Amino acid sequence: MNHNREYLSVDKRRFTRIPFNATAHVVSPNGSWYSKLLDISLKGALITCPQDWKVELGEHFLLEVILDNSDVVISMEAAVAHIDKEKVGFNCINIGLDSISHLRRLIDLNLGSEEMLERELHSLINPDKG
Image 1 (cartoon, rainbow, N blue to C red):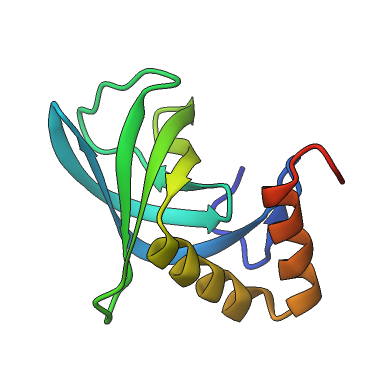
Image 2 (cartoon, rainbow, N blue to C red):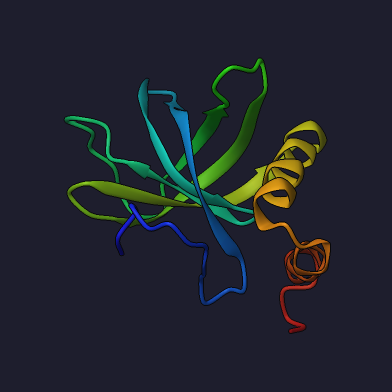
């Protein structure tokens, strides 16, 4: 998938991925790494793979998205969903109220459609109902 796209993409789980430039901070009991956020959705994030990082599918981390020119940090417990040489995809496992509020606002501003955002929130809350 080309992360330099100028458009929004919808993954198979019905969540729009928003290309967004921010710093990603990945934290585990074994250390922490800084990286670049490539895109984000209500259900996860895609980052550049930190240099010399050894990670396994399903491994859990604290993922912090640090918004530029702001004191806002979106923090979530996330599991590694896919890995390649250059990118790591995470699924959001748990996210606090402040962080989901910031994430919702970020996505709302970038989607430009309240109706689409409401559909995605419904899919997040009711994953078995389309």
